[in-house]
Image (cartoon, rainbow, N blue to C red; front, side, top):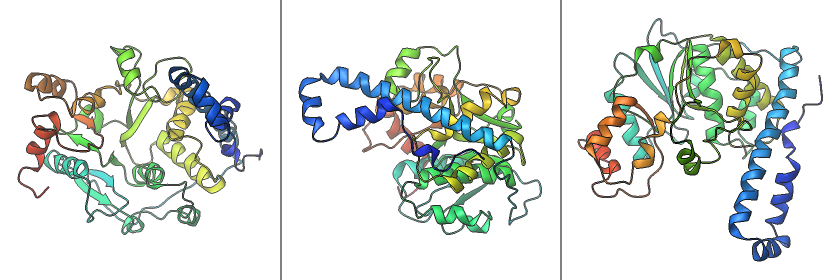
Length: 335
């Protein structure tokens, strides 16, 4: 085995230098004499190089995995569902807790448009009723760097591998049942498409995620995943992620899962790639939540996509898209 222990503790040199400049005592000089616009460019460049560095780390890690120097896991389910179609969701803080408004809204939309799916929502109290995860996973939960979001990255793969079904993040909104060409795929995630319109606009909205440059290695949305039980791509992703949890003590980048997938799907799993559907589509509604509601534009979005990645909203702006959605999905509930 190559020296992979804590390989992800390392950083790109440029990022490390920018981080040093942003801290005292160099911070005083850096913020006084370097213009804000130029500092932003340096930060963006540091982030790109860090993502590239994480990709190189994944390459080393994956070399060990595919040469059978890392463990291959076979998780077993604790429930039997026969042929039941399942939508899986997770809210670590507790499904019965005081949920954020956007989560209530999204859950309600899923309940309305689940069609013939059974919706199973998990939290810390019941996840062990469904999955028999290795002890090192639970031990690693004591590491503050391995937050709820990163645990959710792991369990979504485990649930789909063991049971199959559809994974929806707690902030996924449905405006119609999931279409069969997506729900019946061996596996599916929305991904970056080369023919996306208005690329610059999307880049300006989120330059860390929406980028079509050759250097970009964050090209997949894992908030919505379809997977048949035992799908090879998701099984390998799960195996690799479990080995990451077993051997590493640091999360090297927020999008470390997406970078891992990018390395795999452009390399050893290239022939296994699912259909590519533009990952800007699930974000169309998100960037209009506080805008004045326009029924024609809303229907135009719904004609293009019925799966929407939402985000947290501080307050409901009157007559906004978010106000309309609240009325649509929570009008008969105590919100």
